[in-house]
Length: 460
Image (cartoon, rainbow, N blue to C red):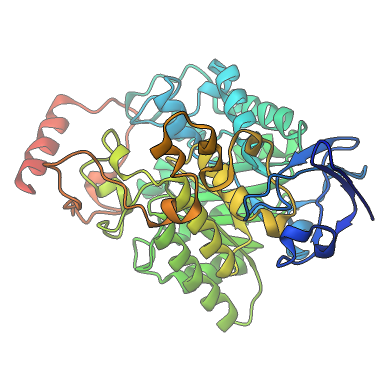
């Protein structure tokens, strides 16, 4: 390993392993082994003194070589940074319709999906998940939704976009399936598995790197998904959208995880529905269950970017603010750094986000974990650590905020003097098999809506 410092430009050029004695200001950090970037690429980072106010630019020449797979990375103890919430982000940008939450944008507005992938890649994501959430045919045809593209068209377009952007960096492509209206409507195991099979046929054809079964409220359906995904021979991850109380049938997180591992998932965890604190707590319970059963797995967490201390077992969907008034609950970038550290300390090595997560949130994860990963993301070029860029602000009181202790101690105000800090979540208490959750191809009728409005009014 060689390290050469330019005293005129304050640039340290390195290759291989940078030892702590080669950078005086960071003598308290362990040796850092740099991760591979695309062959011949130069990666500018501000790692060497990331937790200090010494601004040293490190340029790393990456070795050539093929990308490591997801299990190869996790088996080696590497941190994998996931991406963020495509559905919510693209709804806010005008490319996804709230309600159905379906991903036609992959085929209809590919430039929007491609750009969001690129922003997450620049923010530090190692995984480009295909924008295939709710891309099953039964969901695309549900409740009068106009199906302008087939599931196959959407899934193929989403794979192409994810792969295109992943190849611009050191990222893997994950093909994803999620819970189905067919399961909620009590269709048979074979019927539900056939829906998953149609999606994974596309993922196999497009040769994605691994598969994710995500956003399942019932472990039974997640098991069915994992069993289908496992037939491809590709690595399988599975995440439930549950909290510490377990799935909607009361199966504990530990038991859920054991069932998923036995079904064939090598990576298990939680995504969506709850905030980072709750999700990390739930993954810990999953980890305890797997270890108690004498099994092995890797663990992942992709929570909401919203504070949800007042949720019940169905998470943020039961909050009265869902989905159009959640902004006051958004986590700051500093909250995200805390989440990244807590997840890492809990033994979680696949750390990302779901609904509400924007690229700057993912960048915060990557920045917090930079000492362990060995580099900062490209997006950190425009972000001083702990607000250090404010040193250049014109106003002195703002310059005084260019420090870590200021942002760590700050309790952000909402600016809403007449709003409560907590909400009363809805508690309809229905799940699979209940008449209210039976799905239909026809649009919701006015009579059906009136019955729902009347019921909602009685619960408030």
